[in-house]
Length: 305
Image 1 (cartoon, rainbow, N blue to C red):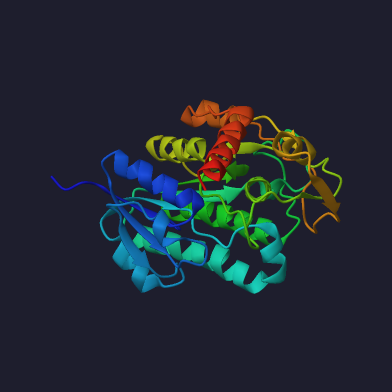
Image 2 (cartoon, rainbow, N blue to C red):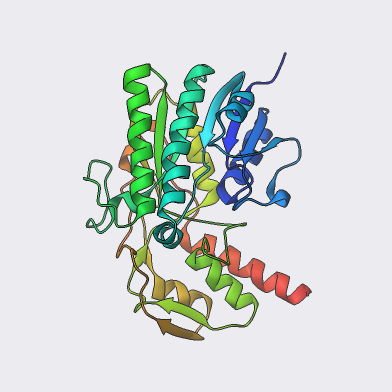
């Protein structure tokens, strides 16, 4: 009996590679498509079928999606700062790319598409943020991910393609970007710790973030696929948050401050009641345990050098 096929777009990236590993461990055949703009060859798990290319290429998508049971659409031009400087590229990748994924998934009769969306949808809405709040995008990235949600919902309503959108809060864990325009604050802090450098805090550090471990995000994707839920959006966060200053204090007292970045939200905090009720998911890795584990890894690797 042939194994069922799952596709992960962006499967050579941070979240996508962890998801691909998990799907392989569950016995699926996994196909990865990634243009390698943010992905890395060493992140592609052994046993996965890899197709290097762009989600703007429909012919390649048809080849990758052929016979697939499900598609996990993780590929995106991600993060706030790059989207402000590259708004056209952001729109192409996140809006047209997502539309292409849906068009081809429908053609190939894929059973369900799980879309990786973003808590940037909420902008500066008061915490905790709930799925029924109106959109408040503060940057092109946030807007583009929201438009992707709308296309997913539309494809479910108009064409009967089951979709489910997951609004990720601040995902962290092994392989998270730690340098360049796509770096995440925790990754940058840990890299600075490893290199003995000063931690740079943008603003006064009062911004609060809901960090959710990548292993929990992977579990949310699989729970979403296995559920009967479709045509809706679910928050994927820990339901707790921590200030950037508190985060820095956990890592190092060697700190400096720079002006706050344009387009940053003040507070992110997920209300996860809906995900708990609809797909039976909630985060298991606490912020404290997850961050301490990563600090321990940095200290361990530094001592071995």
